[in-house]
Length: 200
Image 1 (cartoon, one colour):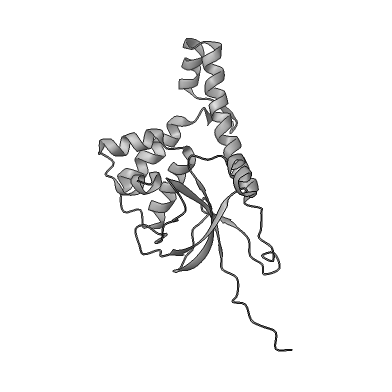
Image 2 (tube, helix red, strand yellow):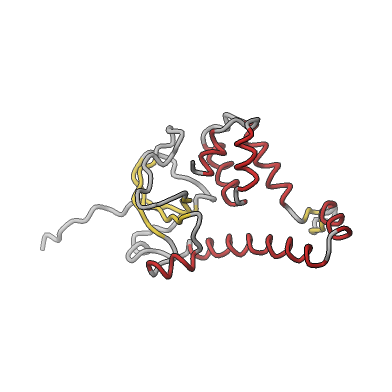
């Protein structure tokens, strides 16, 4: 089952929900929160559990002066863990930020002709479409890195046309058939105007 869909549908008290939440990436958890809030925030327990998990994963917090300082649990970790363990924790967190940054850079990519039409990729982390319709989406398999995708097809992400319905629990009503396993939708854009032959 899709990670984001599981986080949005399983009861927060269910052991499967907890298991999925612990293994989900921070980006998947953020997308799940956004999806649930977009659906009216019906299950506040799930949203709170996701927000708590994201907060627990933070290494820093803002001090009284507004500057970032290490969280208490990081100070404990620094006192009890070896330097190698501390470095692993820092590198894992840095890796998450680099992945997010890489995805952000990828969102500046526009398909040929899209700039002229005033169309740009909109990350799903910023917002989802407001109305029912067909949209072009950028997506990637959960088990593939951007580098692997570039090696395979020469582009940073795969692209698909999907139908979106804000009133449907699944939101993106169609599934991506060529995806062999779990995937995540990263960004979307409205479809261009229909092609018209020149009357000249």
